[in-house]
Image 1 (cartoon, rainbow, N blue to C red):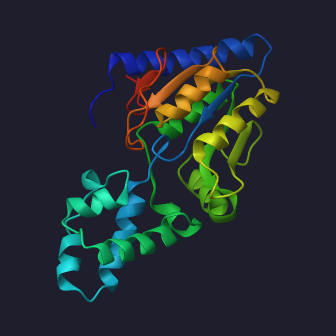
Image 2 (cartoon, helix red, strand yellow):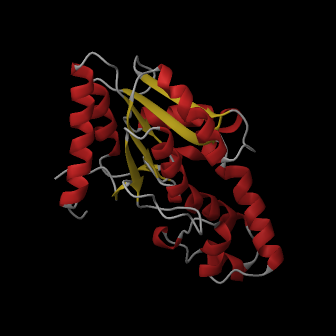
Amino acid sequence: MSMPSPEQDRVLRSVLQRVAATAAGHATPVVVFDLDATLYDNRPRTLAILAEYRQGTNDPALSAALDTVALERVDYLLVDTLRRCGITHTEHVKEITRFWHERFFVDSHIRHDVPLAGAAAFVTACHDAGAIVVYLTGRDVPGMFLGTVASLRDCGFPIGIAGVELVLKPDAHLADEAFKRGAIPSLARLGPMVAFFDNEPANCNVAQALCPDATVVLLDTQKVPHAPTPDPGVEVVRDFTLA
Protein backbone atom coordinates (compact mmCIF):
# COMPACT_ATOMS: atom_id res chain seq x y z
CA MET A 1 0.00 0.00 0.00
CA SER A 2 1.43 3.37 -1.02
CA MET A 3 1.81 6.18 1.45
CA PRO A 4 -0.85 8.90 1.46
CA SER A 5 0.06 12.20 -0.13
CA PRO A 6 0.77 15.17 2.12
CA GLU A 7 -2.36 16.78 0.70
CA GLN A 8 -4.54 13.80 1.66
CA ASP A 9 -3.05 13.81 5.15
CA ARG A 10 -3.79 17.54 5.44
CA VAL A 11 -7.42 17.16 4.35
CA LEU A 12 -8.20 14.26 6.68
CA ARG A 13 -6.46 15.77 9.70
CA SER A 14 -8.20 19.10 9.12
CA VAL A 15 -11.57 17.33 9.26
CA LEU A 16 -10.67 15.72 12.58
CA GLN A 17 -9.50 19.08 13.91
CA ARG A 18 -12.72 20.78 12.81
CA VAL A 19 -14.78 18.05 14.48
CA ALA A 20 -12.90 18.47 17.77
CA ALA A 21 -13.10 22.26 17.62
CA THR A 22 -16.82 22.26 16.88
CA ALA A 23 -17.52 19.78 19.67
CA ALA A 24 -15.46 21.88 22.07
CA GLY A 25 -17.60 24.86 21.14
CA HIS A 26 -20.70 23.12 22.48
CA ALA A 27 -22.18 22.35 19.05
CA THR A 28 -22.61 18.84 17.68
CA PRO A 29 -20.57 18.38 14.50
CA VAL A 30 -21.94 16.14 11.75
CA VAL A 31 -19.76 14.19 9.33
CA VAL A 32 -21.46 12.51 6.37
CA PHE A 33 -20.11 9.50 4.49
CA ASP A 34 -21.37 7.75 1.39
CA LEU A 35 -20.71 4.00 1.34
CA ASP A 36 -20.12 2.52 -2.13
CA ALA A 37 -16.79 3.64 -3.62
CA THR A 38 -16.39 5.99 -0.63
CA LEU A 39 -15.99 3.91 2.53
CA TYR A 40 -16.13 0.61 0.61
CA ASP A 41 -14.69 -0.83 -2.57
CA ASN A 42 -17.69 -2.69 -3.98
CA ARG A 43 -15.85 -4.11 -6.98
CA PRO A 44 -15.32 -7.41 -5.11
CA ARG A 45 -19.13 -7.71 -4.99
CA THR A 46 -19.21 -7.65 -8.78
CA LEU A 47 -16.32 -10.12 -8.97
CA ALA A 48 -18.15 -12.56 -6.70
CA ILE A 49 -21.35 -12.33 -8.76
CA LEU A 50 -19.52 -12.88 -12.05
CA ALA A 51 -17.74 -15.86 -10.49
CA GLU A 52 -21.13 -17.31 -9.56
CA TYR A 53 -22.34 -16.87 -13.11
CA ARG A 54 -19.18 -18.44 -14.52
CA GLN A 55 -19.60 -21.49 -12.30
CA GLY A 56 -23.15 -21.98 -13.55
CA THR A 57 -22.68 -21.47 -17.27
CA ASN A 58 -22.35 -24.33 -19.73
CA ASP A 59 -20.63 -22.14 -22.32
CA PRO A 60 -16.86 -22.84 -22.21
CA ALA A 61 -15.96 -19.68 -24.15
CA LEU A 62 -18.06 -17.50 -21.87
CA SER A 63 -16.58 -19.17 -18.81
CA ALA A 64 -13.05 -18.61 -20.10
CA ALA A 65 -13.77 -14.94 -20.82
CA LEU A 66 -15.20 -14.35 -17.34
CA ASP A 67 -12.17 -16.05 -15.83
CA THR A 68 -10.07 -13.11 -17.03
CA VAL A 69 -11.96 -10.54 -14.93
CA ALA A 70 -9.80 -9.10 -12.17
CA LEU A 71 -10.37 -6.35 -9.62
CA GLU A 72 -8.53 -3.69 -11.61
CA ARG A 73 -10.65 -4.53 -14.68
CA VAL A 74 -14.00 -3.91 -12.98
CA ASP A 75 -15.44 -0.65 -14.32
CA TYR A 76 -18.29 1.48 -13.03
CA LEU A 77 -20.63 0.06 -15.69
CA LEU A 78 -20.95 -3.70 -15.99
CA VAL A 79 -21.18 -3.50 -19.78
CA ASP A 80 -17.70 -1.93 -19.83
CA THR A 81 -16.37 -4.65 -17.53
CA LEU A 82 -17.76 -7.33 -19.83
CA ARG A 83 -16.34 -5.59 -22.89
CA ARG A 84 -12.90 -5.60 -21.27
CA CYS A 85 -12.95 -9.40 -21.20
CA GLY A 86 -14.35 -9.75 -24.73
CA ILE A 87 -18.03 -10.31 -23.94
CA THR A 88 -20.00 -8.13 -26.36
CA HIS A 89 -22.71 -10.43 -27.76
CA THR A 90 -26.02 -8.73 -27.00
CA GLU A 91 -27.76 -11.76 -25.54
CA HIS A 92 -24.78 -12.67 -23.36
CA VAL A 93 -24.52 -9.12 -22.03
CA LYS A 94 -28.26 -9.00 -21.30
CA GLU A 95 -28.24 -12.36 -19.52
CA ILE A 96 -25.18 -11.59 -17.38
CA THR A 97 -26.50 -8.11 -16.58
CA ARG A 98 -29.82 -9.54 -15.40
CA PHE A 99 -27.98 -12.10 -13.23
CA TRP A 100 -25.74 -9.37 -11.80
CA HIS A 101 -28.57 -6.92 -11.14
CA GLU A 102 -30.58 -9.51 -9.22
CA ARG A 103 -27.65 -10.00 -6.83
CA PHE A 104 -25.75 -6.72 -6.65
CA PHE A 105 -28.56 -4.72 -5.04
CA VAL A 106 -29.53 -7.22 -2.33
CA ASP A 107 -28.42 -7.89 1.24
CA SER A 108 -26.76 -11.24 0.64
CA HIS A 109 -23.88 -10.05 -1.54
CA ILE A 110 -22.89 -6.91 0.39
CA ARG A 111 -20.60 -9.09 2.50
CA HIS A 112 -18.11 -9.13 -0.38
CA ASP A 113 -17.42 -5.37 -0.10
CA VAL A 114 -14.01 -4.36 1.25
CA PRO A 115 -13.42 -1.14 3.24
CA LEU A 116 -11.05 1.39 1.72
CA ALA A 117 -7.72 1.67 3.48
CA GLY A 118 -8.10 3.47 6.80
CA ALA A 119 -11.86 3.96 6.40
CA ALA A 120 -13.10 2.28 9.59
CA ALA A 121 -10.39 3.89 11.71
CA PHE A 122 -11.11 7.36 10.31
CA VAL A 123 -14.88 7.12 10.82
CA THR A 124 -14.27 5.89 14.35
CA ALA A 125 -11.89 8.80 14.97
CA CYS A 126 -14.56 11.26 13.82
CA HIS A 127 -17.10 9.68 16.17
CA ASP A 128 -14.63 9.58 19.07
CA ALA A 129 -13.85 13.26 18.53
CA GLY A 130 -17.51 14.12 19.07
CA ALA A 131 -19.13 13.92 15.63
CA ILE A 132 -22.47 12.45 14.75
CA VAL A 133 -21.58 10.09 11.92
CA VAL A 134 -24.14 9.86 9.13
CA TYR A 135 -23.92 7.14 6.51
CA LEU A 136 -25.86 8.68 3.62
CA THR A 137 -26.04 6.09 0.87
CA GLY A 138 -27.81 5.42 -2.37
CA ARG A 139 -28.53 1.88 -1.20
CA ASP A 140 -32.23 1.24 -0.56
CA VAL A 141 -34.05 0.15 2.58
CA PRO A 142 -36.10 -2.71 1.06
CA GLY A 143 -33.17 -4.50 -0.57
CA MET A 144 -30.00 -3.52 1.25
CA PHE A 145 -30.65 -2.33 4.80
CA LEU A 146 -29.89 -5.55 6.68
CA GLY A 147 -26.81 -6.37 4.65
CA THR A 148 -25.50 -2.85 5.09
CA VAL A 149 -25.87 -2.95 8.87
CA ALA A 150 -24.14 -6.34 9.02
CA SER A 151 -21.28 -5.14 6.83
CA LEU A 152 -20.70 -1.99 8.87
CA ARG A 153 -20.69 -4.07 12.06
CA ASP A 154 -18.40 -6.77 10.71
CA CYS A 155 -15.93 -4.32 9.15
CA GLY A 156 -15.46 -2.33 12.35
CA PHE A 157 -17.40 0.82 11.52
CA PRO A 158 -19.44 2.53 14.26
CA ILE A 159 -23.04 1.31 14.01
CA GLY A 160 -25.89 0.72 16.44
CA ILE A 161 -24.60 3.24 18.98
CA ALA A 162 -25.48 6.78 19.98
CA GLY A 163 -24.23 9.37 17.51
CA VAL A 164 -24.51 7.20 14.39
CA GLU A 165 -27.20 7.52 11.73
CA LEU A 166 -27.80 5.29 8.70
CA VAL A 167 -29.85 6.93 5.95
CA LEU A 168 -30.83 4.87 2.90
CA LYS A 169 -33.16 5.52 -0.02
CA PRO A 170 -36.76 4.51 0.66
CA ASP A 171 -37.10 3.35 -2.95
CA ALA A 172 -34.46 1.77 -5.18
CA HIS A 173 -35.80 3.66 -8.20
CA LEU A 174 -35.09 7.09 -6.70
CA ALA A 175 -32.06 8.70 -8.35
CA ASP A 176 -29.11 9.01 -5.98
CA GLU A 177 -28.42 12.68 -6.63
CA ALA A 178 -32.08 13.63 -6.14
CA PHE A 179 -32.22 11.56 -2.94
CA LYS A 180 -29.13 13.23 -1.47
CA ARG A 181 -30.21 16.68 -2.56
CA GLY A 182 -33.39 16.15 -0.57
CA ALA A 183 -31.75 14.43 2.40
CA ILE A 184 -28.83 16.79 3.06
CA PRO A 185 -30.93 19.73 4.34
CA SER A 186 -32.73 17.43 6.80
CA LEU A 187 -29.41 16.61 8.47
CA ALA A 188 -29.24 20.16 9.83
CA ARG A 189 -31.49 19.05 12.71
CA LEU A 190 -28.55 16.97 13.99
CA GLY A 191 -26.04 19.81 14.04
CA PRO A 192 -23.72 21.74 11.73
CA MET A 193 -22.26 19.66 8.91
CA VAL A 194 -18.49 19.77 9.25
CA ALA A 195 -17.56 17.38 6.43
CA PHE A 196 -19.11 15.43 3.57
CA PHE A 197 -17.42 12.50 1.79
CA ASP A 198 -18.65 11.03 -1.52
CA ASN A 199 -17.23 9.47 -4.68
CA GLU A 200 -19.58 11.29 -7.06
CA PRO A 201 -18.61 14.83 -8.11
CA ALA A 202 -22.28 15.70 -8.63
CA ASN A 203 -23.11 14.82 -5.02
CA CYS A 204 -20.08 16.74 -3.76
CA ASN A 205 -21.16 19.80 -5.75
CA VAL A 206 -24.67 19.55 -4.28
CA ALA A 207 -23.28 19.26 -0.75
CA GLN A 208 -20.99 22.25 -1.22
CA ALA A 209 -23.85 24.37 -2.56
CA LEU A 210 -26.18 23.39 0.29
CA CYS A 211 -23.57 23.44 3.07
CA PRO A 212 -20.92 26.00 2.09
CA ASP A 213 -19.23 25.85 5.50
CA ALA A 214 -18.58 22.10 5.28
CA THR A 215 -15.38 20.51 4.07
CA VAL A 216 -16.51 18.55 1.02
CA VAL A 217 -14.24 15.67 0.03
CA LEU A 218 -14.34 13.66 -3.20
CA LEU A 219 -13.03 10.08 -3.08
CA ASP A 220 -10.98 9.47 -6.22
CA THR A 221 -12.21 5.93 -6.79
CA GLN A 222 -15.02 5.20 -9.26
CA LYS A 223 -17.65 7.59 -10.57
CA VAL A 224 -20.47 7.59 -13.08
CA PRO A 225 -19.29 8.08 -16.69
CA HIS A 226 -19.30 11.71 -17.86
CA ALA A 227 -19.49 12.98 -14.28
CA PRO A 228 -19.28 16.76 -13.86
CA THR A 229 -16.08 18.45 -12.81
CA PRO A 230 -15.85 18.99 -9.04
CA ASP A 231 -16.54 22.58 -8.10
CA PRO A 232 -13.64 24.72 -6.82
CA GLY A 233 -13.10 24.07 -3.14
CA VAL A 234 -13.96 20.36 -3.25
CA GLU A 235 -11.04 18.44 -1.74
CA VAL A 236 -9.84 15.11 -3.21
CA VAL A 237 -8.42 12.05 -1.44
CA ARG A 238 -7.69 8.51 -2.58
CA ASP A 239 -8.60 6.72 0.66
CA PHE A 240 -8.52 7.35 4.42
CA THR A 241 -4.93 6.55 5.33
CA LEU A 242 -2.98 9.07 7.35
CA ALA A 243 0.76 9.59 7.26
